[in-house]
Image (cartoon, helix red, strand yellow):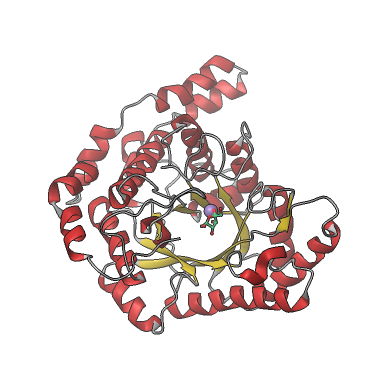
Length: 405
Ligand code: PSV
Ligand code: MN
């Protein structure tokens, strides 16, 4: 399998040693588009020091890794990150100590995709969309990337606009064609989203639809859960648990939200929800009785899919990595024996207490110690701010066209 530097968690490790997995085993993938100028549909606010090329986006991802030590892969988005010479980009990433994770297809911005991409009523547009995903497969092969990620903006805005079963048939046909050209050691992630840009029906709207499709594609296709892509109140950790049980939870796009698909920093709005999600993953990693869920959890990709519209981007990314790392560390502290015993005894409060006690633990001093022992700064966020690198970047990146939506 191509690069996914997650190291499996040994199932029975003492609590404090287990926490070290959050520093040594965990990998948090950084999206190239997390460093560009973004905004809402009302306004993009330009920032200083924004990358002008994909090489500079890779540099920013490498900075996040240099300070945190756990962000060893970077995702690309095509065509945003297209270059003439992929070997040059690969050499650049190698030199910066990074590997490529997901290659994300973009079939939502070209004017031809107004009525959809692989589900479009017109066969020529469908062929173009399949071609865009196939191109990502080829790029993944050249870059030795771990995965190709498909998110479709496909859907309709009005009842009756198109035939819903017809669109489903086109979806399956198009993705089968694209999957057939997936490099042998690469995985395909299919992301779902409740709505937006389509406002009435979305062709891959929820985890059930994504699971149904990936099952029909093959063993190397799995579901990508973007935490921002659910209706309010949906129990995301239960979706995670079920997808682990089915062996199809392949990836996360992590971010936080208050209302819609807000793409805020992971753990910034509802850290307990993030804890409940990471608990399901760690719980599966430690569950020798469920080898499918265990293997699936150990191979899951954690990517940050965030837009830093008003906050400085590299510090925000470092903060997000730390938020996730701290939350995973808390999940690693759950006393699983206590939890299982309480569940078996039907002791509701004791079982819930096993989670709550872990969630309430301040793991920051322990993580600081573990980082220092590995030659990393105790507090990566503070160390980056104190380094002067942010201001140096502002001075160095003058002129050219900052990457933007
Ligand atoms: C869609 O909202 C999404 O979450 C998909 O992952 C896209 O590829 C990404 O955002 C970037 O626009
Ligand atoms: Mn996403």
